[in-house]
Image 1 (cartoon, rainbow, N blue to C red):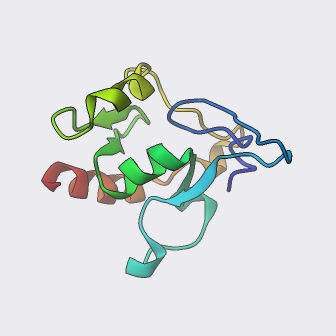
Image 2 (tube, rainbow, N blue to C red):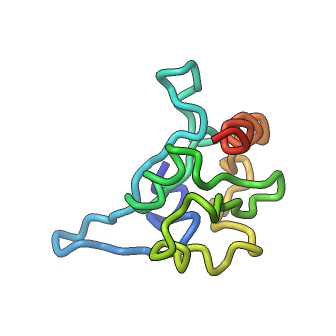
Image 3 (tube, rainbow, N blue to C red):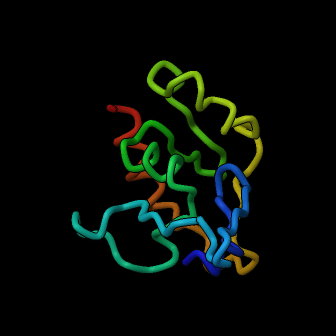
Length: 115
C-alpha cells in the first residue's frame, strides 16, 4: 500500500525516510480488517504515525472528493498545523484504480461524524 503512495503520507504529503532508508509512512486501513474490511489497497492510505493515530480514532476523515475533514474541537492545537492543506485533495496513487474506494470512505466518515 505504501508503495502505491510513493511512501508519502497521504494527508501531510511528507515523505520521511529514516537513517536506515526505511520510509516512515504506514499502511492504514480505512475500514478495519478486524471489523470485516478487505485487505486491499483501495481500503487503505499511507499515513505518518501521528496522522494514522488520529485517523484510527476518527478525529480526521475524508470527503467524497478526497479532502480532509478535521474534528477541530477534538484535535490538539499542536497538531492542527498538519492539516494546513485541508481544502486540497490528499496525495493519491498515480494509478486511479488504487484510490480509496468511496464506500470505505463513507463508512469511515460516518464514524467520524459520531466520534
